[in-house]
Amino acid sequence: MLGILERSAMAAGQAILEVYDAGPAVTYKADTSPVTDADHRAERMILAELAAAFPDIPVIAEESVAAGNVPDIAGQRFFLVDPLDGTKEFVDRDNHFTVNIGLIENGEPVAGVVYAPALGVIYAAKDGQAKKAMVAAGRIAGGWSRIGCRQIPDRPVAVASRRHSSAETIAYLAEQGITDCETIGSSLKFCLLAEGRADLYPRFSRTMEWDTAAGDAVLRAAGGETLTVEGQPLAYGKRDQPNDSDFANPWFIARARRF
Image 1 (cartoon, rainbow, N blue to C red):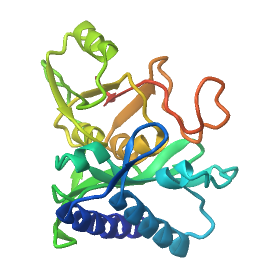
Image 2 (cartoon, helix red, strand yellow):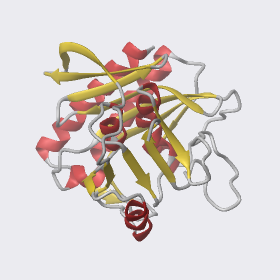
Image 3 (spheres, rainbow, N blue to C red):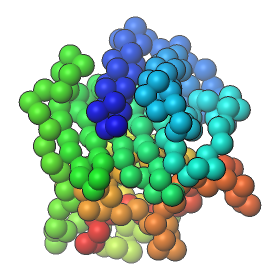
Image 4 (tube, one colour):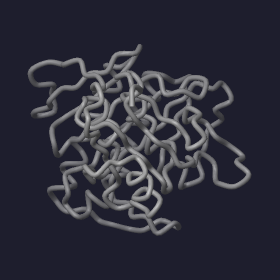
């Protein structure tokens, strides 16, 4: 399975780069978030690949959900797809955007791929193992390397959203005594924790499950965890929420487990 997800993400990433180089056509959804022709093109490619390889596993994909296409996930095994996470970065020609494909089983992210095509780096996870590789000309270059969360240093490093920080995030970091914080877009924040380049990612602003599933899978496989502010593991497949829309996440804190 993981090889198919990797190839699908890299093919979608190649299509995204073609639009990136040509200049995307941007429109805006009902929630005022931007969407481009790259989002739609990448999602169509991923959905076709997943349908051909895994016809019995439903797929929850960002742009399909926005169009009202939500398959039944009663079986509790499904994919979450964000074809272009960090669309604002993409539009502004900031290279920190990603392709995300995550597999959920019984509410947990158990496999995932995060590909940053403009940076030429891909992360993947399955069966409790996380790995990273460089990508050149649409292919893995130099092989895969195992990654894992680091032992927490005396001065922990946090990562935070470049565009969606909040007063609550700033206050939380101050409470933890953390002064070293890097801001970065997309699901790459999870991956920086997973490969031991940072230690904490507090997110006290809105995200959706397709934003986090793949990166969360990589982090958990690398030895980290993602918890709600109540201390419970972030769950997936959330429907009929009384105070929010389907698949919306609560605030969370992603971290190296030993933090």
